[in-house]
Image (cartoon, rainbow, N blue to C red; front, top):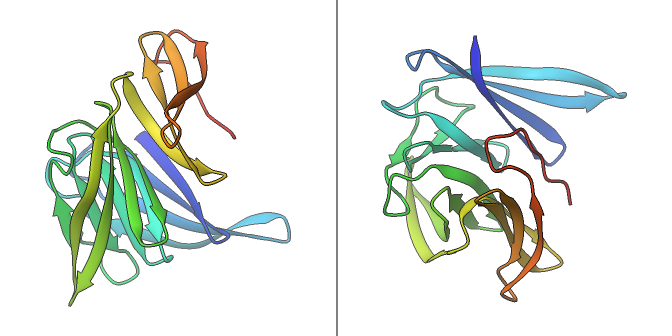
Length: 193
């Protein structure tokens, strides 16, 4: 039985990370493509989760590295084509145990957000087979929990929940673009821009 599914698209390849109720079970990463308007399974990978690591967000970098955010403030990285084990697992990357709610690469920077309202930018460097995470900027939005970030027209947008409102905040120009009364974060939702 599955407890969560995380999806990501990168350069025309689609990824699905499935998580079971049993934390001892492997994470299943499925890689798909669309061929003649049909979704085709390319490959499946069984990944070993780090101890006490419950996935909450994913991103794929260069179609070879999977970055997974956790419910307890960690980020794990896998070279999923070569190994089922995480090659790095950083704990409390934002200085707290808040859930990592989104991961996004822009060029060579990793942007991540937390349920506690923090957002940060980090560089990732690789030496030998290990990665090093270096946070270059971090801030906290006092408006509520942040569920994600996107870039639109060179503007950094943050979105999340404040009490029973869903909001979109333009971090670049420091103003709220929109808010909608919705009953709060404990409902099914999706943002499309």
